[in-house]
Length: 457
Ligand SMILES: [Zn+2]
Image (cartoon, rainbow, N blue to C red; front, side, top):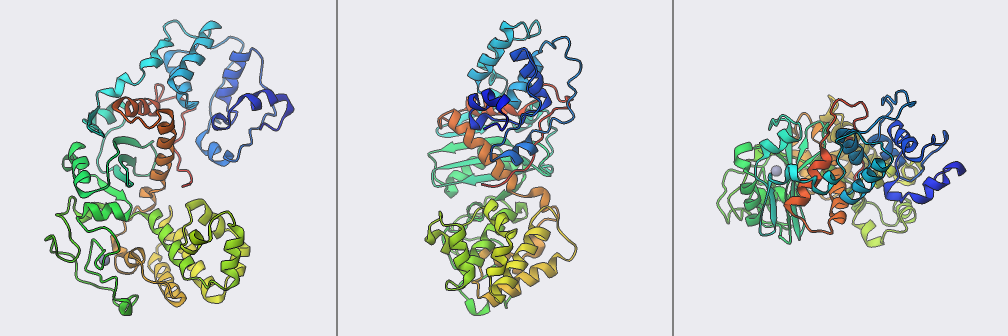
């Protein structure tokens, strides 16, 4: 709710999901809409305000002289609708109200919104349950991007019932662009092959960032807890005696189905894979918690702090990004740990901050080594993720921060809200409409919405 009583009307009328910081642009619209200036001290204080602050940076927007109303051009109105994240119906409502007050420029069309997806619809095709982009170069052009395959990476996300592919900008400067979505499709090798074929992967050859399950599918490996689960080498995950000891294993050179957990021919080269930093961070957290002393104060503190999470989940170490960040800043948690746990926790924090995050320090090898030593001392089993840190540190790209998969997580949130809007009916029209919301009509406008990385929920 709004804190100021003056603004209670706004607070009451605004659904939480629609609340926004009161930016200069919105102030201006408020004045045009209500005919008087908004209260000066209005503050919107929903839980998400930090995130909103990041997304809504209108501080440089020049309001200009308000003595004469500025009539909104089609471009003004379109970008406003995008900034407010309005559906087609809401856009039409806002447009017709503004029109009723003669605040629209001659030629600004309100009915335009009903077919706003038309501009992008031809870029998408559908085959059974798979909707895909049939011309990535033209789509990117229409969105105002020069499509350079070196500047974008492909993020593939899959679950038991759906798959989606999105282009993410390296450096995360631009919004992510959806290029395929399949619902009611299982994550299998055959379906992955079809998806890559439809989006013409061979033609573009983007680097791929995905979780390790998708990577395994792409490299033709069997899924599940298999003995040879590394796509780069013949590491024997069951040879516990040699975990943390034997670093170099033979590289994978044989890709015959049936050989060391190979099930199919690889679909992409291993050089085209980015190991996903966020995914590895979540895995390291899991390993840490699983190895904690269940009868000691550290584990008790976790149970008490996250009393709403089931004990089974805590025991499995299933935590999400924001919870991990919260714990990393929690001095009481740190103090509740025993010596071995505290050493491992510190090295985990260090790796997150100086290697897996946006910064990769020069002595990252020492930092990672320290993690391996302290995790070993803690008695943590070596997971596939720890194996990557142990044996394939040189496989992590130099620009790790720029290709962080947190951006993919943000897209995941964006697309979930779109999914709600379309009630799960994925179609070329829906993806086209989503693309319309990504475009800017006034690219030079100073109030351009920033594409910032937000927290992984
Ligand atoms: Zn390996």
